[in-house]
Length: 163
Image 1 (cartoon, rainbow, N blue to C red):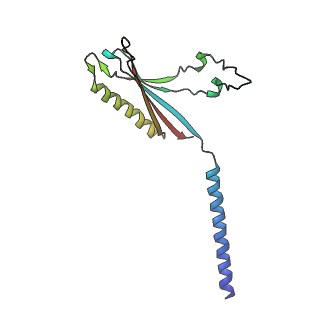
Image 2: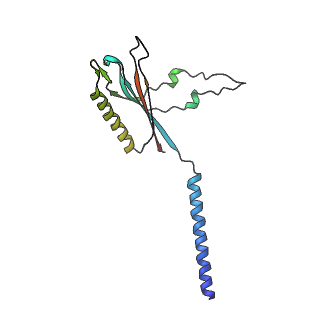
Image 3: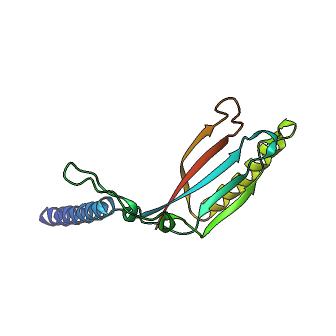
């Protein structure tokens, strides 16, 4: 009987060690802050009548640190960020040509389908590179009244992936 109790005691100690190690590993993974990178791809599709606008899929290849272009306003300090526009602008970006929604005859559904195929190709490539599509948002600025005739349909695709 003593030997059986001793074996049970050893088994209990091994189980407690296993649980302790498992909990420690679990805490390490939950308390470690994951590092991600985020990429925004923007499609700008012209809804200007007669097909006169420009449509593009835009992707920046350079990074920017937003803190260099940000100021905090307080009651005591209301100074503004003095960044120059030229310092914010990107010169290294990818521009993919898209077709305009309109041509001389009106809405061109083939153009919309072609744009969908190009955008799908870009998204598929990014997914293959390990990016996850986490959010999509879109907006329209359409004809604002008599004599305007301008407008764009803009969509932002927001991706993330672990670094």
